[in-house]
Amino acid sequence: MKKLRFKNRNGVLYYGVGDKFKSSKLKDTKVNRNIIINRFKSGALDENLGFSQDYKAPTVSNYLDKIILEKSKNVRQNTLKTYESSFRRISSFFEDKKITDVKPIHIKDFFQSIADEGFSRTLLNRAKFILKELFDLSILNEDIVSNPVSVVKLPKFNQVPKEQKPFTLDEIDLILSSAKGQYKNFLGISFFTGARSGEILALKWSDIDFETETISISKTLSKGLINEPKTSSSNRDIEMLPMAKKYFESQRLETGLQNGFVFTKSDKVSHYANNYLFYNIYREILDKVGLQKRSLHNTRHTFASMMLNNKVDSLWVSSMLGHKNLDITLKVYTHYIPKQEKMKIDFLEKRYKNGTNSIRHL
Image 1 (cartoon, rainbow, N blue to C red):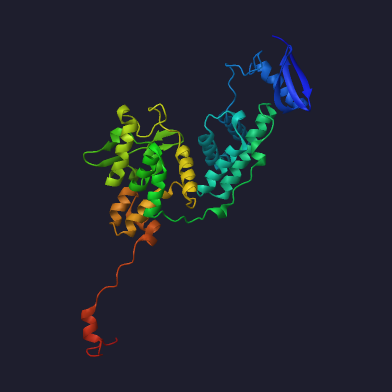
Image 2: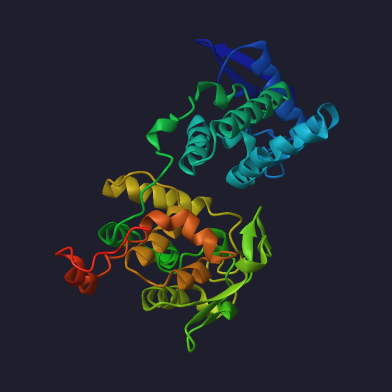
């Protein structure tokens, strides 16, 4: 193997083998020279100065595993549990993204997703702390030069109200008319079934019965895996309303021939690891049509409030949502149930309006 050489051109580091040099697009510093040397030694760079086809850059998940291992050795078990939610969200959001491909905009989008979903500032701060550690470690290993987390500000929580208003029917129409393909079908099914996004993404075509117009929900997508729901009440057969059926029929044209998952990746076979792609498309649509930012979970709230506000039987709504009992539904959505009209008591008013036959006070 030939010797790697360096040149400084106007403060920019160039590297080369023999007489051929290529810009690293980095400042000429000792640290950056060591990064190039280590990449060359590890086989990341071939003698033509390009990235070797055999080289696989470490991913965010690779470094997250290192952070988890380090913390498991240095912190108490109870403390480690407080990090688990952040670990899961980082892993789900970045998946197998190479550490060298992560830009500040990706970090910003990740932070915003946490804020938009209504999670606490504590979780957001903890996630930022973990990511900063993660990228600092990759700098020490000379995989990257700068930490993308350091230039990103946390979103302001007052931009997203704690109590998000459900969408109106006009807003639902506006959103669906702006969506396309399976993203439109996903949102249509979300709005008109009240199912959770994890439940929808776990559906298989064997769960859909077009003849009886029922949907069997017995699984949910969680942490990249298809699992059973946490509660037995979440296992349920729900009615396929005509509005939802329309979107299932449209989606069947996309993936129905495989008889596998209702929503799949481009290979028409693999299920999604999480709902982030659908969430990002949904957020782009809200921006496009000028609607207030609301969590993807708001589609479920919209379904419930829409039904209850139009005097649909609350017990039916509760069963559609998979609530353990009616009390839960009433507690969460009581402000959407219209007040009963004042009872007509004409027969009493006629009897007592003139003070005759008045009721004796005991």
